Image (cartoon, rainbow, N blue to C red; front, side, top):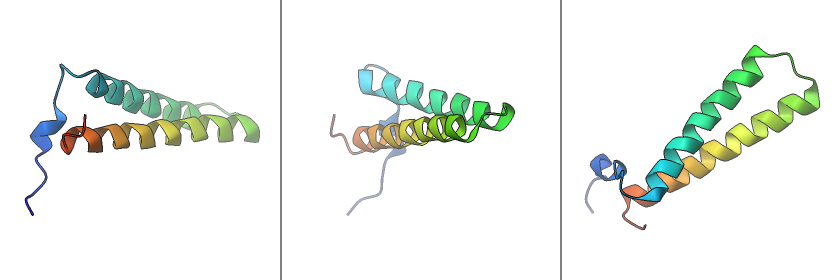
Length: 70
C-alpha cells in the first residue's frame, strides 16, 4: 500500500479540478458571508449549509483526482 501523491491533485486539464477549485473558493466566500453579515437564523443556516455542502463536494472531487478515479 503506497502513500497518497498530492501531486495528482494538480490536474488543470481536467474539468473536475476547476470545479473543485471553484467549489472551495465559493465555500470560503460563503463562510466569510456568515461571519461578516448579521443574517437571521434561517439565512445563516442556509448559507452555512451551502458552504458545508460545497466544501464536502470539493473534498470528494479532490479525493477522486488524487486517487485517479476521474
